[in-house]
Structure formats: C-alpha cells, structure tokens
Image (cartoon, rainbow, N blue to C red; front, side, top):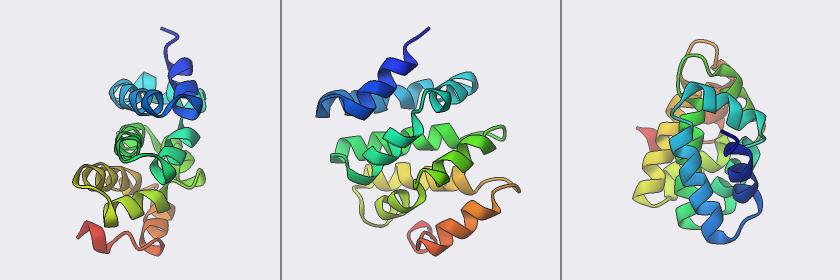
Length: 137
C-alpha cells in the first residue's frame, strides 16, 4: 500500500531508467481494478501520456501498456475519458502507426480499450480523426 504515488512521481520526474521502470510497474499494478482507480486519482495518466508522446523507446512501450491497462474493463469509462482528455489518443495512434513492434502492440491494445463500450463514441471519433483506423486494420 502507498506505492502508487511514488511510482507516479518517478514516471513524471525520475531518471530515464526510473521513468521506464515506474511505467512498467504501473502496467502490472493497473491490471487490478482498484489500482486502476488509484493510479488515475494519483495523477498517473498525464505522465504516462507524456512518456507515450516523448519518452525513450522503452518508456513509450511501457506507457502505452499502462494506458491500455488503465482503460481496460467495462467499469473504466472514467479512465477512458481521462486518457483522451489528457491528449493520449494522438501519441497512441502515432505509436500504432510507426513505433517499434512492441510499441505497436501496446498502442493498438490501448486504442482498442479506449474505443471499447457503447459509452465511448467520442473516443472512437477521436481515434478515427487522428488517423488511427489504418494502422489497426
């Protein structure tokens, strides 16, 4: 208990290795529904979006994986909206289009989770507008 806030802080402002390791830890923690909420409440979405957009190759892959896990599940519409509002769709589309194989896989998973469910039509439109359909087909 209490490990999420320090991990979010490292993802935001640690060394390059710490950022990647923190994002990887958040991937694993976000597989739990309670942790998904706790990570979002701790401000974890914005630094993960920032890493997906401008991190090292490893950071981008781990951040995309963490965002996928944060958006996973039928009870996570709040996280799906928060990821989109934080500007997460465009960097995920960019990774799905031109990232490494690992980045493409994680970003495609994140985009699928962001679009899943009947309440996420805005995300579906945003993904299409960002050019996200072609790399997923």
